[in-house]
Length: 554
Image (cartoon, rainbow, N blue to C red; front, side, top):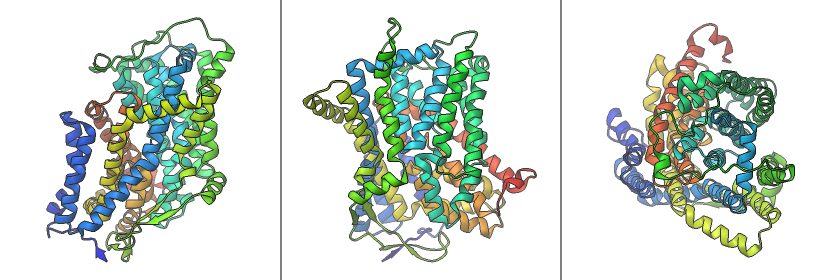
């Protein structure tokens, strides 16, 4: 049995800096653009092993087992999602159905700003609510790229848009994890998140269009931006506070899609915005030209149904796959669990991170049938049959997809290995305790702790599991509402989603802009920090300033 130590150097500052090295080193390597991202991930992983073993005293055999567990969880479920959604996308492109679909979106509106509202925000929110774990960025990034957006615009704007729905993503999985780790009521947690994020659900559509077209472009489409934001934010608040948190994102996204589409039937901007590049310097088209949008005769209804069929199948299958009843049946059929020998329950988290010493489980449950990636693969195979692919052609296309995304899969597995090692070595808790020492400013910095957790792990669920207990303990010590601060961990965390390394790799893979992860990171980094700071300010107002304090459950 090994007990984690959160101040191995006997100096809180030095220990915190050491704990920050792996993630900081990874981000620096990616941002320089001088090294391929999969190499950067492997180098950062090696550095994290050295710090965990030599700096924090973690037994080397445990460190290596944690790395292996993390690499496996990197491929299942996240890498599995990416592989299969790119497979589906390639099938539709090869048959020409994707080109028809992109023309149909152009028929709704040729304006690039409105296409972003429909695809990046509303359509992406549906996939976040249904499955999460990288699916929204993978789908919307590939669609925007196919519509002719520049690679940087398609990747970066998909990442920014995929924020407001994340706390309720995958049918409320982050709230479930937060409740489990903090011991607080999931309905109260979901309701509190539902009093924080709707404000940002109103803000994010503005932010996406502003980042794309600047203020000059934004002011021309304020009415649909308001329609988009309100039609998502209001249902998100009502559902999370008066129904349950499980359906908050997916139901709100459906309402948003229907309302926004209906509004665009009667409203179009006075001036159509046709540029597909960002308002800032964007030479990504020169780096990798986007496929041209071909203009043909208006497709027939039959052609439109065929073109949208793969994506409608995907929506339906993911919706079904996400229900508890279906998951229960599928997991009952096949869900073997493997305890990692030499790691499972052999590491203790200790106070003040937890109330009493708590062993860390190390179990990999292979719920293969209920994975979102498996649902996407099934959708792709069904769609392939509709499109007339032979079994031989399907297999050939699948292996070609593996070849295309192989480095992305290596990168994602390495990054999850780094995040898993960080958790088992206690580096995450060291960083968390540094935030917890901020006293009266804790509502602000505690929110940023959630942001940091997602930036490190790539998952709002994982961040909630890591820091949920710490948020409850610290808030009670400071006389704050544990419901408020646990919820703030999730709400702040969603803004870290756009800069976590695996999300950036997902975006670069979806847009086929391999090797340019540094450009994407540089574009979204300031946006992520600015939005996280705004969430932190709002939570601070909830903690101390009337009438915001009326929202708080104590």
